[in-house]
Length: 210
Ligand code: SF4
Ligand code: SF4
Image (cartoon, rainbow, N blue to C red; front, side, top):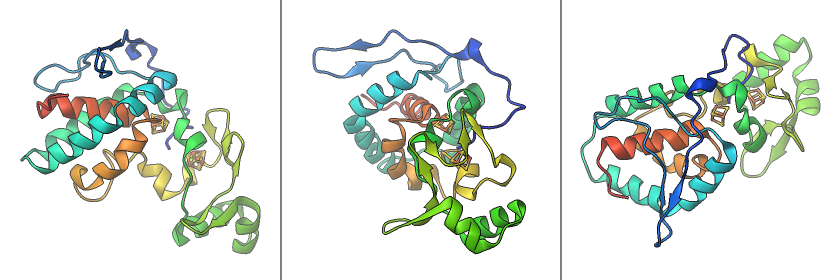
């Protein structure tokens, strides 16, 4: 959840609209964007309709890939490096899909920081900008368009945004190894271009047979 960086230049030249091929058994072949040695080679899929379609189609494959990673040695450093290259190739300000789709759980630190920067009392902040859920506790309020602080593709509280937004989608920035966070990525691959393309790069790097 990283939209709102006005300093981000759009990187349209890197956006590859891919011609996807579906095989007789229903699996999907998307063009590879990375060379055999894992170097970024010039294109990622960012079209959100394609990401949704591919992410859903590859749910089973991505679950298998998670088990594949668990059962083999791999370098977390190399996977992280690949994910960094994917992140560098994607402009979150042109996407903002996570802010539309995902809920944002708040920590006490987030609540203190945000109410402080807005110069309002904690209780007022909670009343005006949050809602409480059984599953997640206190989350940012949402409208039909997504997060209450999303304006178009811009985060209105970017400098003070919650910790979870700062680290999203938690591929490059997250606690523990990438493998320990893989369980989160199958769902996220259905709406986040960074996650979808990172998983594809990881599969190539680890020679996963799709
Ligand atoms: S969904 Fe992923 S690519 Fe899109 S803005 Fe969020 S983190 Fe960035
Ligand atoms: S606070 Fe809302 S708009 Fe800002 S980054 Fe987080 S989810 Fe997106």
